[in-house]
Image (tube, rainbow, N blue to C red):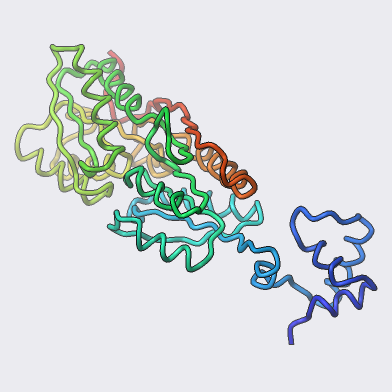
Length: 332
């Protein structure tokens, strides 16, 4: 039989409410009382019942962690950081796989059934309205890796994808390329649109440079590889800005499979600086997205919203940086 809170109270010689306060995060309790109760709990092998606690406090401490891009390896890093970060704050992540879902209604219904205290939408491809649907039903929400905005409708933490596109263009120009292309993820994704916009806008001031563009059907290795093989059957550009690192790695695979050299024949720059980008056989030049800072800031905002649900929405946008490795030819 499980040890009850009443038994711990009897062993410690205190009231049940005192035991409850000891195991309630943020509750006021003296050090002497805490030591006495924790000693009794250890001796009896007592563990607090999270479900019973939620019935008492009205909080489940469940945070819905929603994403739709599970085939991209970078999300293994993202989910690892999110789950550990939430757990360190005494919260419990509830992972939700949307697959190809873009309408929020089913997710809202499901997460309301679980009585989550808040939701983190961790996606750069879902539209801003997806996160807003949670806010509209009164669930605190933060959109991590969301679209930058000067007047966000929900809390947004991420990067300026337009500026990242500009950075990629400036980098390719600095490396001496005169025939460059954008190879993006899904055309309808806001991250793809913004990276493409910044890239082409920066290049529009350099009329001597030839430009082209294409889109893969997903942010995935296979999608990047397929699209590059198609481009290689025509006339490839000198260098490509790929919409993210996993696309870049697929592109790299296709180029090498075709007997060509990177960067000797074709240059590549990616975006994210995922762990695989640093592997010796990949060694990808890329734009680093500060993932750890974005996740830490998202969790900070979520914790603040649990105490202040009506907190005015803000956008926290982090700067990126170019990481030079070996998939572009030397600087000219």
